[in-house]
Length: 245
Picture 1 (cartoon, one colour):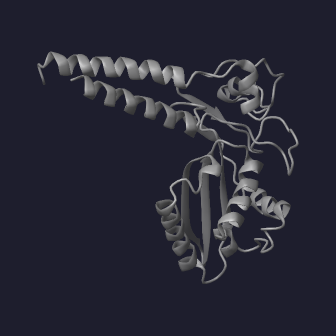
Picture 2 (cartoon, rainbow, N blue to C red; picture 1 turned 45 degrees about the vertical axis):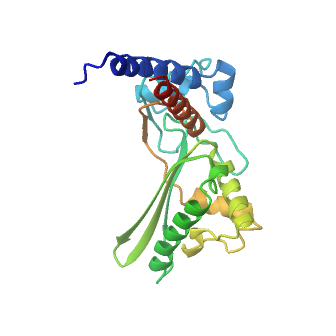
């Protein structure tokens, strides 16, 4: 352990300053903002979900969301608490992990290697243009191939900050603009006119969506942009303190 008082002071100051700036950067939204960013989902739904109740109760005014406290949400089988019609179907709630979906569909025979190659395509696209997927407001993507009997299935898991339908619409626009076709073209039943038929694309996604029944967030409801902003502030503070030595 170092006995250097400058280093010790620097570490303590950086830790305190980072916590303070992160708290300011990740300030919880007001009640109105929380309702808007949740796609209209009542704040009372969180308490309902945590209680394990399966029937929606009258909603309470949305309260502030404390990103410093981990949160979990149990979700009904339908994937939502109350039916609110969106552009293409029922709205799915924002959870402590933010928005997301899990798509499971059978791949076309002989397309496994094409799907794996598409993963490399995405890797190269991001390496060449790091912000190429920025319009999707993603946190994470995870793709899995697995067998059931003699058939191979594809699982697409994504966590993002926009609502379910907007993510799909943004993906269509992004792939159309970049000239990169979607990996979904390798899945059975996927509409090949997807570039000009957004409703058919969304319909496929919704039909193959498997809703979570539990989602957890160590730092709930924090967006990817807020996380990156907090890390930039931490980096700037570290650089400033390095220059002070």
